[in-house]
Length: 82
Picture: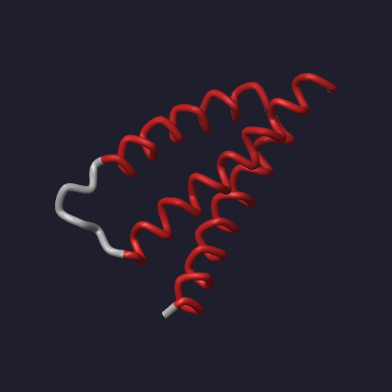
């Protein structure tokens, strides 16, 4: 199960990271705004787990957040350093 969860994590992380990365290089300011809005929603979703979503769904959300946070940091770097 651990290997499967790692594969799912990598799949979700990569999907978010590479989707947002291209946008970040085109327009870091707008991408930063978009990512922050998405992250706000995902953090709320992480906290709303009254019914129990299970390990696979939890892993997907955590990976998506991680991928977006990585790009958020890149956007901030691009905006600061040009």
